[in-house]
Amino acid sequence: VDPGAAGPGPVDFSAPGALTTNAIFHAPGPYTIKFVADDGELIGTAEHRVEILPAAPRNQAPQVNAGPDQTIFLPSLALLQGSVSDDGLPSGQLAIAWEKEEGPGKVAFGDATNPVTGAAFDTPGRYLLGLTASDGELTTTKEIAVLVGVQFFNRTDQEAAQALEYVARAVAQRLLGG
Image (cartoon, helix red, strand yellow):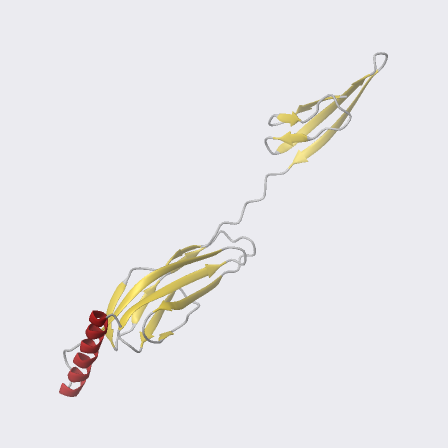
């Protein structure tokens, strides 16, 4: 058996002269496969039409941008300006979440499932926040740093003294390795 093919692209046969062969089609579209058998006395032919469909698109990981690093002063909120996009595969559904990954205190998100939201902090320090998007198969996380400080202006003497005491303790801990 000797197969031949006509179509929009080349076709490779794994064993062209064998009774059983595999075919690799290099382009989508309609093909006509022609089989010729010759036993020395008789010649037989047969044609078969096949339609090769384009390959299904492959799922790509969601694209995530957590936005710029920020510095804020208590009691201000950080405005998180993240963005998420996806190719719609496999289901068109995205799970989105902001999470605190590092930091000395608690973080409260206005809407942790929205890439653009506010975040409130209860303790000064350096925080690492992650924005994660998952399409059910693939997951992407990007991080931003938020430096939360204490503002000394427009404070009562007691508030300023407490803030200075906090800063002094933090500096002492760093210097002493604790």
